Length: 637
Image (cartoon, rainbow, N blue to C red; front, side, top):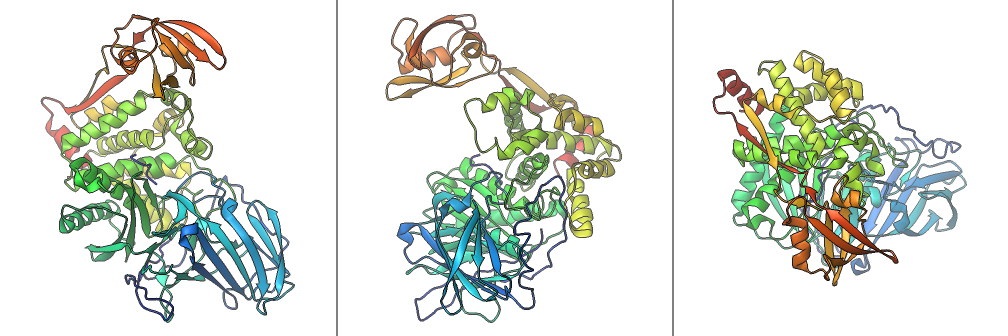
């Protein structure tokens, strides 16, 4: 996943046809099935749901069919039907996931489920008992065929949640489809019934052979959960990358200066991404793009991704290239996380958090490679790429939490912290995206240097892909990742991992960049003093919104949510607040009167120098031939 601006092989299918019920159309596509990889998991507690239930339907004798309907999209409800056959036990437990793969937060999707009921094949009602927050037990007394119906409210527009209104529907499988608790590996079919007037279904699921329109199949629940479905009248664009068909389902208003150039650039990005590992697991791919005023980041899936972009994204050079970098990030997830993955991330436990220390690899190094890919594809000059890295480096090093939270723990605590930021987050945390990108950069440079320019980080991804995805058919442990790096580099970096990944010491950027003839320079971000706080005008009330650890405000007793009543003896104004925050010399005195809850405080403060630094990465004046050769390797030339 990539933040808003900031496994197996499966199927993709989009096709069109018509019916007596309504006229519908979609785009055709077909993927070949590849057997699910046998995988293992460590350090993850898996709930053994329904342990007393009898063995569920077998693959040979049972079937599971879903129907996804949307008869009244303006009410924001999807209607789901499950037809189960061959379930001969006394009862069957049905589960709704609590989270979506790629988005590491328990979202409690079951809270949107309502009107659940069950009946026999003859239409007789069956008793349903709710066992816990996301498990329903259907008592069917040995009747192997029964039906379950329920509604799902879907009105949160993001790449991580389902949404439907009068304009389109977006069904994220993990928040829509329940699964039989003891039959998660069972194949299934999904029939999509678009709302009246909607003509296109876009999904990475493959069409079920010999069936009517809009009927798809999945090899197991993991595939269904991780193959979103876009329904509406979206425009579909097509391009081919290395002989693989790619489609773009474009929902919402947007303007492309040149559609042919846009598709040519998409081809460049995707083909460059494929070169990293050098093995293409695809025979089809789908981009679902939602054009919304809020934008929205991206979320990776098995053979597709969902992206959020503003309608005007393509109209500026910066917006256009940022979109291509987002594409590179989500597309590279096809390898890094969907196939090259930490052992904890698959097969998924949909009931609980799936803990891993390795999101700095799965997300941070994906972001590192996304920027490398965009640079290698020619969308950025070398200096522009250095500037991007320097910006991220500054963000990491100027964030107080970087000195307190190791990036491995940032990953592990993603479930409780990353998606729940508060006013103190920057003081106590660091992003596994940004810090992971910086660790990836330094590690890449160390590999290039250790191998005298023969190898780089691409070779680590290739080894992991061959050894764990293709060979052992499972994810890798923390130690196995370090072993893979050592195998590529020809030497171990155990101290590096202990110090900079599992510890919070500042990375030695200068030494690593020096290997390739680059210099890291820094200077104070501002010559002015720093209050170390942000103040916002909220309808004429000047309220403190953040306080930076160890800054003037932090040490002087100014708190988040304090209201500034007076600034140097006068009522605050936009200009006086701006002057105090950004244009007052170090050592200057500020006198604040603030309201803290119901109590008024007088706070005399002396501005400290601005602790932040601005960073630059630039070539040295006279690089050696060896530095130039290593630089070319690092840049993928």
